[in-house]
Length: 435
Image 1 (spheres, rainbow, N blue to C red):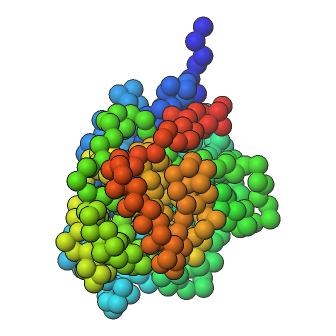
Image 2 (image 1 turned 135 degrees about the vertical axis):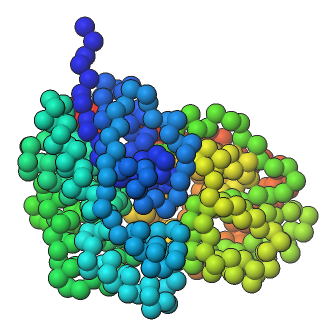
Image 3 (image 1 turned 180 degrees about the vertical axis):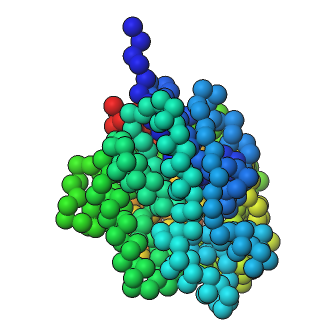
């Protein structure tokens, strides 16, 4: 007799057609959970009302047909923001895509940090709670609820469901909360800062289980309250989906192509790496170098590229659907990853690093030695972190890369140890936790 599947309610703001990194984790969990006898039901925001930084329609094809998805209304300030600023794009969490010096932006950041706690998407919560009440009143039952954040206001939904109905609650925290790298830029007043920290403690203390994406993030959260037990914190990193890597690797033969995908700004401090690349074009004139940035590149980084004379060596590709992004990885010689030079960056483990690993390319990581990202690369044999200020180290590393390319333009690594980071393997761990 087949086992009766466990029923998991997944509450996530980011869901197709939302694109970018934020949607991948919940989507892949839901995609693979039915294979492990867990039946997910999703509550998310209505696609026509969601404030998504980017759209990727292709991701909808990954939602299993058997999964029920309920979409709710929301009440958020982003329409007003766009009307007042004349901007089409909503601001990122730390206003990273906005002018830092504008008086208008300083005002908006102050309002964001003091009127919308924990964040502006909190207006979605009442609609989700109403949808949950309707489902339960109709006789739907759930063995557990998983709330995924950011936005961290989503965790307050889990807190309320725990209080009202006693549901077993798993808080999935993809990023730090009051330790997020841009937190100080939001200009919280002391009362606002206290309230935000109080919400954070309530969530961490009341959740039955807490999922985090890196060991250092677990350490940060454990320090928030003496009432927290380490046993309920589980490091479940992001990963890669094997089905995304069906195409063969195809590094170019006419140039040494280094690709970066995602968002990058001056905070990532790649200026010395760019200078080292420029030096290598002079040292190794017989090895054509090409840099490719797929995604959002700040004006400051574009200026750094021009200043060192790499303009003609660089290609900028705007945001592309996820499957196309993977294709760019497979058609590269090596991959560039940078960790932002900010507080608490030892725990920053970008989701894309796992897809970088799955592509079997050498990874050039600019960031802190001994960080979670550095340890992961060493564990998998894919590279090591190069500190922001070690120009000579970067130059030596690139010299070796250029010399190797001269012998063989295919620098793909042998099968490296990354199978444990497949989305399916990680979802199996989540299923065991639910059971």
